[in-house]
Figure 1 (cartoon, rainbow, N blue to C red):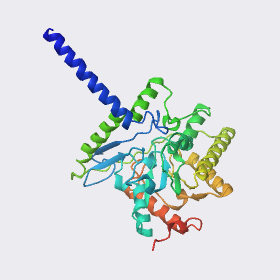
Figure 2: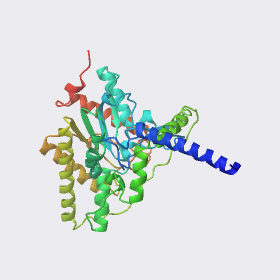
Figure 3: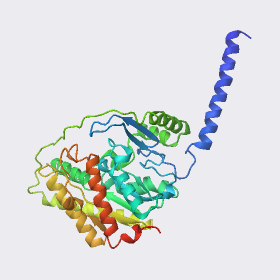
Length: 356
């Protein structure tokens, strides 16, 4: 046998052993054969990113993490999760450090109040998602997670639905969805890629190790400068479009009913929180309409609704780094407001009593 054939034979044997090893690894640790795998869901998971903050002043790096369930949170076991926060980028807070999001600040306030360090909140915010996507979360995402049994779902909503309403008025069309609202791609090649990412043990091991190496850099001290707040201005004509607006608000109300029914089916409680933009912002008028509809829904369906837009004021530059997204200072206001509302609400305070 020539050397070339001998080397080729060795290569084939090693390749076969390697391939067999990967196959065994994927079979045992991958999600391919699991009944409740994430299929081709677009929600990111097993990621860790560390960077120097530019949206607020800080003496250390910022970290953004999503775990194997696609949540942000510092729980050790999914059974510890008592609250899931749902929303768009204002909940996900991609550019804010783990410990400085309003979700984490709220968790720490509750832990201190009830004296239970195992009371955890999972952040299920998805950048760009509106109530259209929040509804789909239950079928495509939350239902896939075994032993997930939160007491509450907190929906921090309004802005992204107002954006969809604005876009539909400009296009004179009621059809407008963000990719985050579909939760799954329509493109066949993207669906395949997402399916592999969600179920491959090798890919997820790579993401976990990559995240671990990045996380080791966390804590390097340095300063940052704060961004100047952006304030986009444009005129949205709503005159003589009352029928289109009414239809959108009816559809929005119907989605809220469906969402609350999904939550009830899980023996959990819904909490809806309204949002705000700075006074005079182009979206303000439409967001007011969406907020009013949220409040009407809560009153009629006897749901818990926290009217944040009426009770706190998020200031540009100080609390916001643009017209929608909050800095840590704004998150202190939001978490403080939500916490006070939870512990004082007659329907909820029994759930937040101090453990003796």
